Image: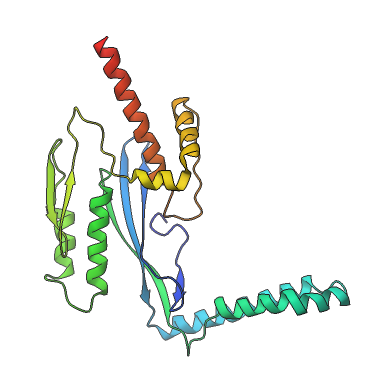
Length: 253
């Protein structure tokens, strides 16, 4: 559910099938956290049974949509004529163009996800590794080593870097480096700050940060699973900076 919050997603060759990266967090009762990083991509459906079932579902959806449009526009003869001439015709054309699937003409794709679960939020390192793994899966050229070896390596042979140290491990094509702050440094914050400013805007970000300082409950709602959690962690990182600076001033005084 965390890897695919909206369930399976189907696309055709005309839809956008670029891979998408998102993250999530699991907070236990004792306050400990586990971080998840997910890369979702689309793979061609080769099963004829699934393709046939999908075409049947599309036909049922089109029929239901046409029935609802026809029923809503049948209040009077005048409204029916005007709606068919303007609204219904346009709606049905859009439906046939963007929301149709023909098994003899279209190629069906289904979403798949690969995920890394980590005790620390090494977001950029996990993203780089997952992208390299995806590139190896979709490439026509085989990777230097079997894919299982890279997965086994990161699961069982790559340790957490000690506090204040960096760690270099190898992905499929390029090395990946992650750094863990020391005990006297700010906590690990590997989220892109620019993304938070672009999505929330400066004014909204200041308002959210003010609510954090006032210890108010905050709910960030996102229409997609790509954004949301990272922006919340960005705001919390600002709070950590303010707290550390306040403690430093109190200690010096």
